[in-house]
Image (cartoon, rainbow, N blue to C red; front, side, top):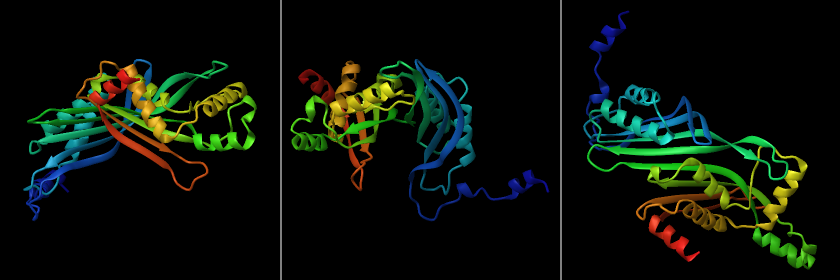
Length: 291
């Protein structure tokens, strides 16, 4: 069988009319695993998952999927950073999809940074998620986000107060309360206004305590004591992440945007607690001046 001849004789169904003339804002590939290997300062990134989407005009039935895969793979060589890779892939998407006017690339990767245990100083690679989200338009401004997602610990202030009331003061120690892991996502636009290490630090700065890969017993005691000494609602975490970010990035542009999402995986409740929102640069700068 001459498969090239089969292709020549077949209809190119992607270019056929769809029957319903509706523009699709985003169509393409999702979850493409790639062997990404990048380093940005102290942050090392290994592997990645990519979503690559383009808009589809109303007269076209389907997107050329292989072109999207090509755009991603061809953009890996020479990438200097996660944001640089996402930008290059979005540009290549528009080169290969001549019918599209916009392209969006979202890259998620496992990132690692060396962490010290609080008492023993033992060092181990601490994992977090790094995200780049880049949209390029043929006729219009680009949009570039850079984000970090971390796991840490929250301790409940309400439970702490109840135990203080029940015990008459907890004998000078932080009062017991329920603790749980919490995930914090913080993402900034434009991507060039910050870096992954700063985003990770901002996310961890809002929590009751960090979570560590390697702890000896003295480290564990220190982490527990620290978390109980800093009980925080998810709402408190949101506010402190925002403040931590702008304190670490005082030159953040007034028209920039910060996206924060906190999800507390509650240990004694039958549900999670979620707090999320978008903050403008001018709000953050005002917060810094008033703090």
